[in-house]
Image 1: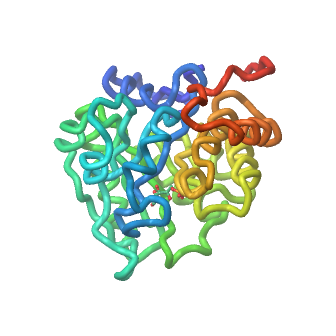
Image 2: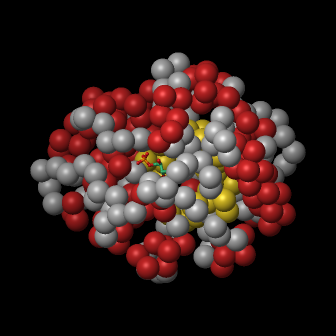
Length: 296
Ligand code: 5RP
């Protein structure tokens, strides 16, 4: 449908070819939606559960992902360059779970490196409301300045960190997302919350949701994905709810079906239930055409 492959959701000056091409590599023009696979957690958490060996976690999932979000270290060590999966390169960091505070991030990776690695976007976290709000927002602005020059989209993550967990509400996330869009982020990654449509409606850039901590059941993840897309998100940039599950391939296929094929959570669960009965390696990609024809 191509509805979000533009500078904003509304009117804007025409986008340069390179920028548009990079965006359309991971925001699929056929649906205007995306399933990004987030595997960047180690950049501040170290060997996160079930991402201890990144190559082992990533390999079976690559063909179902519209992009991989990761650091240059994991890209170079754990993903073969022959893959044509679009790369969203995490370029912020400098903090860890062992230190304080997480919001004290800076830029870790240059735009030249992003180009060398053939990235289709760069991603950084902003920490609105934290002691380091200004530095992270200026880092976003710097990336956008460079990104606009060379045609590299910037994904801004409205991070909350361990200090700000209570801020996962519409009021805060709408504020942070809007600021990211105002500073020029091409895509905003935020969290799902009650009244999520307030976050989407207040943000003139396309929004993807993070999955957050692994939810109790797969149905919880399907419901969240469905509600987010229904509220206007263009998809997910999901990690733990996919690869911390015992059936990660079935999870990403079901999430894809919701994001790209308009499956309901119940239909996604049916797909998941049938997928887990067959070995992951014989599953098709992309998931079979939906059994019902839906128009978006
Ligand atoms: C950390 C990130 C992660 O990529 C993000 O949280 C997505 O992963 P998950 O779905 O596991 O939350 O940006 O700042």
